[in-house]
Amino acid sequence: MLRVSLQSVYLPPTAQRLLTYLALHSQGVSREHAAELLWPHLPRDRAAASLRSALWRISRRSDQQAVVDLRSTRLAIADHVQVDLHTATRYAASLANGPDKDVPGADIPGLLCEDLLPAWCDDWLTDAREHFHQTRLYALEAVSRHHRRHGRMCTALTYAMTAVEAEPLRESAHREVTAVHLAEGNTAEALRHFESYRTRLRNELGLSPSTGFRRMLAPYLGRPLDADSPSSLRR
Image 1: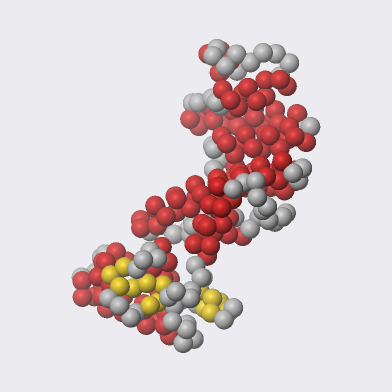
Image 2: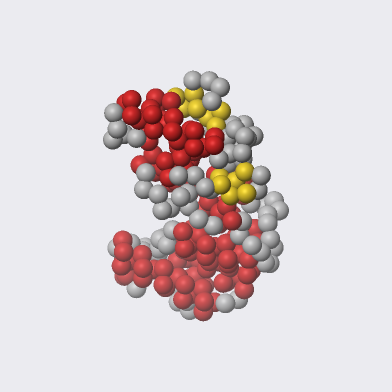
């Protein structure tokens, strides 16, 4: 979504995709490359015309504040434009790399709530979407650990569960949920969550939780947990 002077601005789908593509390439792209990538089904001259039309639509709706820098042969987002993806990536990376510093309070920052344009199917989004997906998962787990260490269990659980919802088979996210339950003294909840994850992992991938995850819960099972025993992997 484009916002100009705090107001949402509607852009046609072709203009939206052009603006998004430029936002993913902060160093800029050539006009020829952008036209060929975004309009691959059109002849070169018609693709170039479609590019010019999309640029005109963007400039027409930007209230005289240039959103795209057209001063060189390369197209780029104007320097003054703030791109939410860049802000979210920097924020997520800072959380993942520095989990012991102060982090936001109870509400999950909106920029980490969902993946990059999940409803879009464009191939050129694949790598950027996966990169941000993994970065935000690390960040969600890191901020959950931070809140757990400081005794803010409800907030910690919210972050951990958001990571689980984003990647249901990710073990590190499930381990963090389990760690929060154990820190609260909710052993039954921890065991229930582990068993739910173990069942899903076995049913979907034919795998078992890691030795480390199982050992994390061994003291609460009332029996030794033999990590090397094939029979224990099936239980």
